[in-house]
Image 1 (spheres, rainbow, N blue to C red):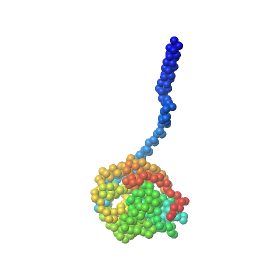
Image 2: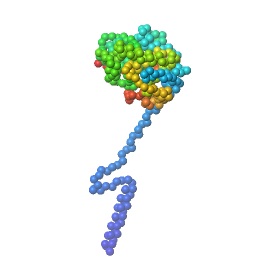
Image 3: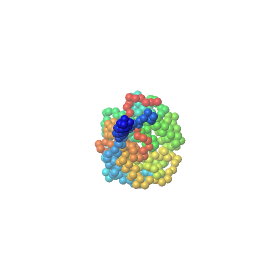
Image 4: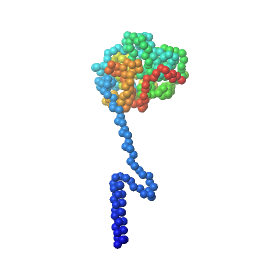
Length: 374
């Protein structure tokens, strides 16, 4: 009898223990034994949510202007092709003073800042017109030749000196000199594209050396302007540019898209036909200098040109004040396009657009306090 009672008590205890263990397991608690030598795995905290990408560029002055232009062409010579852009409603009818005009008349003065600072020059517009300087334009003189890093507007009758962000394009010269004149040229297109998309100074020097090597010329100071001043290359550039320019009708265009073979390599859009007419040859020469001994075949369709321009609607953009505070600079990247545009009073003054070639790098305007000369 005692055995039966003990056995009944054992069964009751066993049932209670099993019920307790089952209850624990149903609550998600892992029960381990001494023989279980695997580490207990518990779920970690939920991962931090991944922030969404920034929204595409809103519909600003550049996007609206692109939507209004018509594409004409092609005008092609040996595979270097130009498509012209026209519109019935230009952004403005302001007659801007260009760097070449201001430099020749002495009304646009560009000089070193103090004793000289590689990444910045200063300028003063003494004319009675707004002055426009284009990113990639070259200035010669001072302590070393430079390329303008960004578009800029300078107000008429300036009494203030305005900073112009620049890159050095003459690595091995730093000597006496203060004033600059226009070199009447723009940086070769590949370099100009890099200036607009985040090259640092070391990359600029590397590309400058590559361009000289490709053209078969050299400069003891590593000066990019030798591409346009060497007798042989200057003649070749002029011949290539002239043949292409002769094909382009003399109409009131506001921009141009340039292709090498079937590949679009740049697009420039200006505020009006007057500004275009004084700068488009400089843009064409920046391409001619890179095709001195090359011939391409084919060219894109007008539909492909429209598609390239329309990439601005899906690109991302960062906005910052223009170098001297007049207008704002838009830097575009993504959606297969890169470059920058200058807007002023809600109007697009100029846009330089290129196939996206590098990851965009933050590009604050350089300050004159830091001397970066080498």
